[in-house]
Image (cartoon, rainbow, N blue to C red; front, side, top):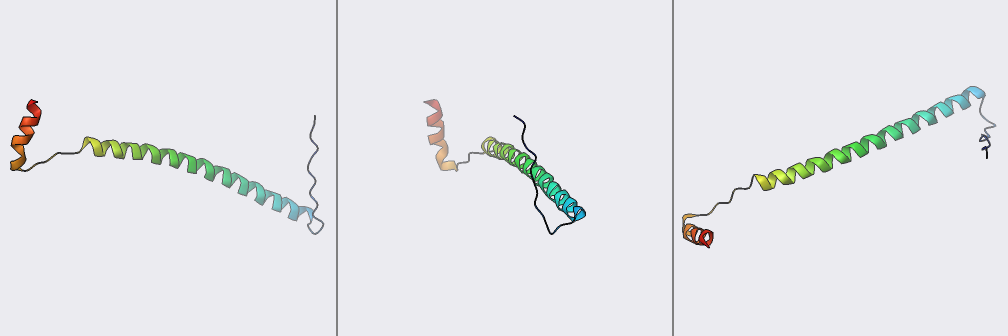
Length: 79
């Protein structure tokens, strides 16, 4: 089934004004599409960065104890 073309009723607009209005709407729609794509890419990048951040935090951890805990640490390692 073929769709009918939309009808724009703009009695106060000249043809040139109507064309300019449509051009602005098309530009705004294209800008919105670009912004949504950029937003999605940034969200993806942020997710990957957060994963790297958490993994780096786990990998870089250093366990430290004072001299008084060394005997207990050795005992725990022996079983």
